[in-house]
Image (cartoon, rainbow, N blue to C red; front, side, top):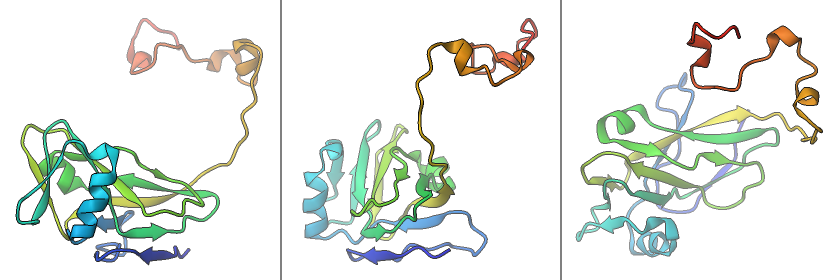
Length: 177
């Protein structure tokens, strides 16, 4: 499968560092006056600062930055682009990805939502790897409202029903499900 893309800013081309990598790396564009103006227009960037020498974008702890990637990408029907953390960026710098899905037919520049979950200021510099995107198949299904829970689960055998406690409840030895 080939994905078409267009570079819209001065940015390193998205790529896989190794041919066997699952994710396609996305990078921070060059921090130009136009890039800074575009970032300031985004409401999600209230906590974002700019280093005085335009060397980088400052993300305060507990805030996020929605960074224009400089890339428009064509996601084929039946798939989505799913943005994921770069392991080194997440584990070493406490920067994780927020909003993650790029739908088929989205035609705008992709923005990368980065959250600083740490306790220290973090600086995003031009050319820095921000996130990776995996292309994931999506089953296009229609939703049908049913009358009650019995109808919702009637296709399952009674002994296959799960409880509704969730989050590790199957490890509870007092439960029979």
